[in-house]
Length: 425
Image 1 (cartoon, helix red, strand yellow):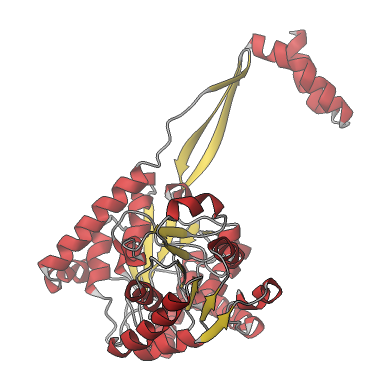
Image 2: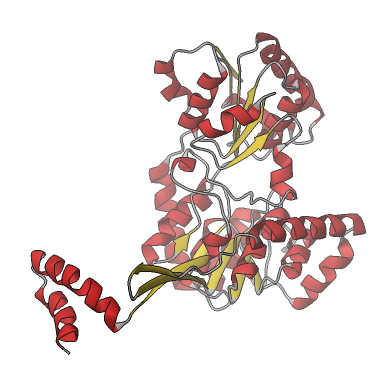
């Protein structure tokens, strides 16, 4: 881990930089994968399963039998936990359904906006070292609330060619239409282009490693939308003298264990808390099954002592973290200062894991400083907003002259005539 004491603001630009990957090399590989999937369809996906995941798969589609058997492989405690989380996530996202508001902008001119679901959406669920069945909840629940007609899910199989039963159970619980055994960039390519088994979708959701992120960026060349660039996980924790060091360390490690490319940052003004958090991290990491992975993530991570909490929030806004934790006694004071963050956790007891699983907010969030211009996934992510307007005769009479003058000034006389011909009648 990298330790900094009172760094000057001139040095902050270097401190907020994420680990850099060879983008040109990745881009070339992504193009090859897309071409292979486009030309060979399911055969390419089966070959990629063997190449990248060491998995033997005869068929890409998950069968009904596999989905139904998954329920019997889970404990009742886990199934109840998933159900509870689903209820909270549903409650939070259902509250985002707007009422239609009709606005009379001028006499006889009424405008409004209505939501329409994106009919076909694709969900990518990472598997590998951590099969994220919680991400199924985060994406399929709002997709269902929005009214998406077809929800396609792709996830990498294990070495036996099977999908984690918790992913299958959660997918069925949340109304996923079809599930397929394919992961990585090839899964994104399949949902973008379509294959014999996998339908083409209109928008793709879900986090992943740098290859998945690069594939999602590439998919936009084909007119398919994406939720956001959601890559390796990250958290920034700000603590004051009232922060509990054990809690701060646990939150930092909860993100570090996601993968070696994750990044965690701790900021404080209190020298005692600063040193104690570092000691707690070193102590707690020894007891983690994924300590090797977390240790590699810590190599790219920073522990920084600053002069004031205002300075800490300023640093955080520059970094724009996926997750921001304010382990502060008076966190309310600093809420208005937060400009850039995916999701914020307030106080010593609001652990980031709550948002990851069951508080109700969405955990699919912008990373790599994209919180400066992207929001996390919400109900809005699964809908298009269509505007409507109705002009009565009186409405056109009241607005007509304004439109005619503006259209003529732009030299668009056909636009002017569309108004004039109606006014004459």
